[in-house]
Image (cartoon, rainbow, N blue to C red):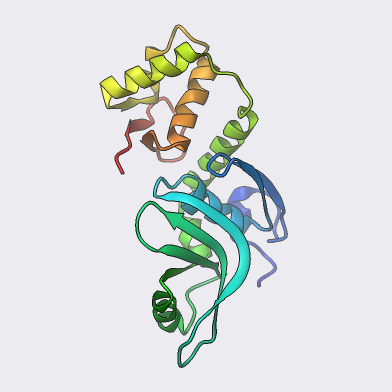
Length: 215
């Protein structure tokens, strides 16, 4: 593993992969310890805010397999999706394993989908990564915040009726409530996959697009 972290350049947490992150997962309703910027990037982009993912477990271990070239399949995260086989995610520095095809076949035999990720998968998405990190921090800070029932209901009624819009239109529709609370409701709705959003580099931009999520 190289000394310098590619992800460190956009997480601004130093120049090594030794960073330890304690993050709160709304999806799993628990604090998760991540041992590197690489794990943080993977969690933000492919687990926590992916509406296709139902649950996940960080538990570096292996599955026994029976193939000509492999007797075990190492992985870092086990992922349950809304549809399809359970996935085994393995995090690398660069590229894919030389025997990646063999690993795919071995995993399929035991009814798993094996996927490898590397720094090349998230480096091009550094702008979105920073925004998701801010979103995660905002949700974590507000996880014990009381939301009036009227605000929740008004937000649901607006989203159900409008179907799509911008963050500005969402906040305008809830203008009789505290803006910070309304923003927290918006973020919770995205985190719970009631709505999906599209943004370039800042989810809190007034022009951020949203629409009702359809599985």
